Image 1 (cartoon, rainbow, N blue to C red):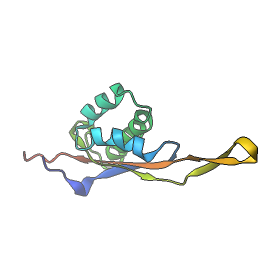
Image 2 (image 1 turned 30 degrees about the horizontal axis):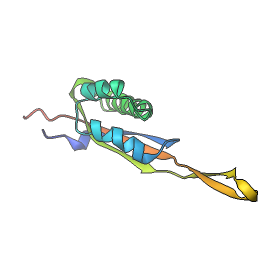
Image 3 (image 1 turned 135 degrees about the horizontal axis):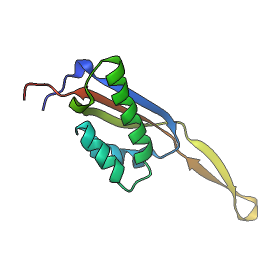
Image 4 (image 1 turned 180 degrees about the horizontal axis):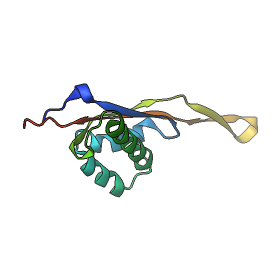
Length: 120
């Protein structure tokens, strides 16, 4: 399976309030798959990270369809990764006047789709 990376189209969701580690678990399942197959996988996986990933995937396909005029049936997920964003630091009171730090991670999700090459 060869991809036409010159027509690669991507979408990015930034500052998603979720750990990048948990999002990567979902992205690993859809990387390299057909668009329709990736939709089905995301629809039935039991993780909360599937919702923002599904949204970004649909956005990337809409970008490819609108900006490049590509048929969604020919698209393949060429790239899918999650980078860490800024960490929100919160404090919880503990015994004897101490404070306990709570880290609330964020991430940036990037999904790129490319048309599958006709010669296979």
